[in-house]
Amino acid sequence: MTTSAILLIAISVITTGLVLGVIFSLVAAGVTIVYGSIWLPNAANGQFFLTAALICWSFATWLAVPIWVAALLTLAVSLPISYLLEATLIRRFYDVPDRNIAYFVVTLGVTQILSGIFSVTYGRWSDQFNLPPMIGGVTFIGPFPMTNNRIFVLAAATVLLALLFAMLRFHPYGRALRAVFQNREAAALRGVNVRAIYRLSFALGMLSIFAGGILYGMAYSFDLTVAWTMAVTAFAIMIVGGPGSVLGAVVVGMVFGFTQAGVSIFTNPTLATFSYLAAMLVILLIKPSGLFSR
Amino acid sequence: MKGFLGTAVRPQLLVLLVAGVALALLVSANRFFAFVVGITMISIMWAAGMNLLTGYTGLVSLAYAGIAGISAYGTVGLVMRFGWSFWLAMPVAATGAAVVGVLLGLPSLRLKGFYFALSSLVIQTVLSLGFVYFVNLTNGDTGISQIPPPDIPLAGASFHGAAFDLLLTCAAWLSLVAAWAVTHSPFGRRLVAIREDEVLAEAIGIDVMRNKMLVFFVGSLFAGVGGALYATYVGFASPRSFDLLSSLSIWLMVAFGGRGTLMGPIIGALVLAPIPFMLQQYDTLKDVIYGALIIAVIVLMPGGVYGALLTCFRKAPAIRRRLLKHGGIVANDGSLRRS
Image (cartoon, rainbow over all chains, first blue to last red; front, top):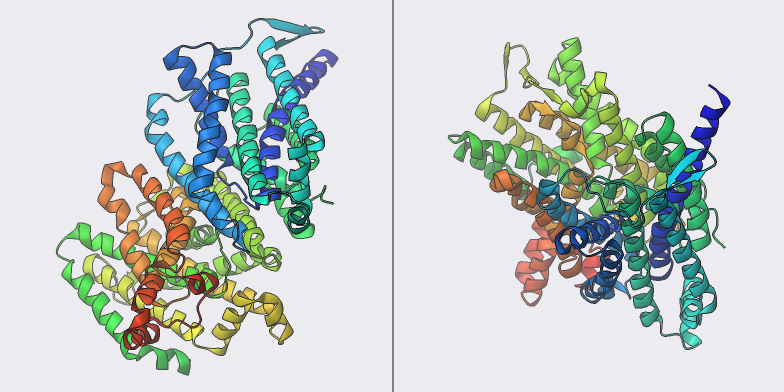
C-alpha cells in the first residue's frame, strides 16, 4: 500500500470518525442526562433518533421547505412529543424506587410500537432516505475531499455539544440538574424543584437525541435499521462512559465514532456493533458505574 | 421426585391437563386452529420457565429466546445432520443450551434489576447476530426449513397432526407441574426471598448466587425444551423466531397474566400467543399491539390479569382464598403489593 493510500484511509477515518463521533456523543449525552436524573434508561433512543430523521425528511420532501427550516421544525416538534410522553408515561414512575427496570421495559415497548409503525409506513414508501444537503460544494483537506455539508454537520454538532456543556455548567437550570444527578434529596433541601428538573432533563435529552437524528440524516443516507444500531451504540456509550456522566458520553462517543469509521473501512460495520456490545458487557461486569463516574 | 409426582396429581393441575387435552382434541379437526393451539402450548411452557426467572426470582432475562434458539438449532443439527433421534437430541441440546445460558449469564447474575436486564439484552443481541453469522450451522437469515417432526421411538413413525398437538399439551402440562414443584419447594421459597430483598436473603444465609444460577439453569431448560419442540412443530427455524422481540413477547405473557403465579403464564399465553395468527397479513401490527400491551401492563396492571382478579375479589375473602390457593401465589411481588 502506498503512502498516499494510507493517508487517504487515515483522513477518511478521521473525518468520518469525527462526524459519527459528535453525533454519537450528542445522542449518548441525551440518553445519559435522562438516566442520570430520572433513572430512565431510554431504550427507545434509537427510535426517537430515527423519528427525528424521518420527520425532518417528511418536512423537507412533502412541505418542500428548505432543509434548515425542516431541521428547526423537527427540533420544535420534539418538545410537544417530550411533553406528551412525560405527562402520560414518565411522570407516573417518579416515586417508584426501582423505576429503572420499569422504565427500561416501557421504553422497549415504545421501541416496538414505533418500529412497527415505521415499518408499515416509511418502510413501504422507501428503502433509503436522503435529506437534501444544507450546503453544497466540497472542501479539499490537502488533496482529500470532504463535502461542505458534512463539515457543517460536524460544526453544528460540536456547537450543540458545547452549548449543552455550557448550559450544564453555568446556567442555573443546568447547575440544578447536576445537583439532582449528585444527590436528589440534598438538591430538594436546597430548594431545587426536583420534578421540574426531571421534566427539563427529559426534554433536554429528547432534544439532544432529535438533534443527533437530524444531523445524522443530513450527513448520511439512512434506513430503518439505523434505529437499532443507534440504540445499542448509545446504550453502550452510556454504560461505558458511566450513566449520568456527560463527559463520559462525549469521550466514549468519540472513541466509538472512530471505531465505527475504522471498522467500516476494512470489514463489516456489524463488527463495530459487536465491539460496542462487548465493551458494554465488560464494563457491566467489572465496573457497572462506568469509566467516568464520580 | 416425590415432590414432582405428588404435585402432578394435585386436582387443580389435573383439571388443567384435562382442559388442555380437551382443547387440543376439540380443535384437531381444523389444522389452522390446532396449529394455533400447539403454538400456544409451547408458549405456555416458555412462559412457565420465564415466570420462574421473572416472576419468582425477579430476573428479567431478555436472552430467553436466544437460549431457546441455541437448543432449537442444536436439536435440528443433531437430528438432521447426525440422524439422532429427537428424544436423544432434544435433552442433549436443551441441557447444552441451559449450560451455555448459565455460562453466559454467570457474570451478569451478580447484577440486579435494570443492569441484569441490560446485560441479558446484550447477550440476546449477540446470540441473534450469531444465529445470522454462523451460516453453516444455522443457514443464516434464510433459516432451516423442512425440519422433520419428532419420531415415535421404536415405532418407526413420527408425531403428526393431533398426536403432535397432544404431545405439546402434555409437555406444557409437565412444565406447569415442574414449575409448581419448584415454586412450592424450599428452593422456590428461597427464590422469592431473593426477589423480595437480596441483601436480606444473603443475611439469613441464602446463597444468592448459587440459587440464581440454579433457577437460571432450570428456566433455560424450559426455554430449551420449548425451542426444540417449536422448531420441529413449525418445521422451520430462523433467527427471527428467537430474537429480542420473542424474548419480550414471552416476558409480556408472564407480566400480562400475572408474575409469580401459576395461572399467570397460562392466561398470558392463551391470550397473547394466538394474536399474531389472527392478524395474518397485518403481522407488523403485532409489534404495535405487544408494545402497547407492555406499556399498559406496567402502567395500569402491574400485577397482571391475575393480580387484577385478586384485587377485584378483595371484598370476597372466600373467592380470593380459592384464587390464591389454585393460582399458587407464593407471595405477592412488589408490584402486586402496590395494587
